[in-house]
Length: 98
Image 1 (cartoon, rainbow, N blue to C red):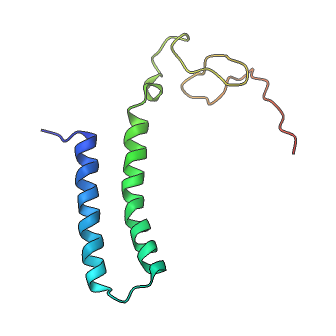
Image 2 (tube, rainbow, N blue to C red):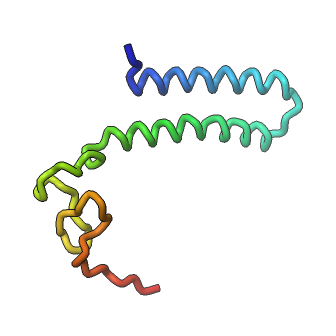
Image 3 (cartoon, rainbow, N blue to C red):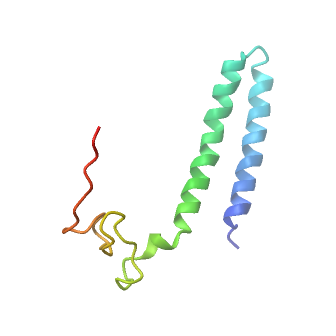
């Protein structure tokens, strides 16, 4: 049986904690910066997995076969988007003044 995303996140979290403990034992004189960098590098794996799994659970991920009423709309003109385009061809984009 496949694990749920939450079970996978928990397992990855535990793996990261174990790795950090082992790293710390082998680097007893590490500076705070080195510790921070090591933990950040390892936690970024969990962060990436959380982002990926959360994005894949989104309804908007699978709208290619949806009717125009069910599709996401352009935030500028409100026209339903086509699966292969990020904005409608006839969209009048807002000009951003800098």
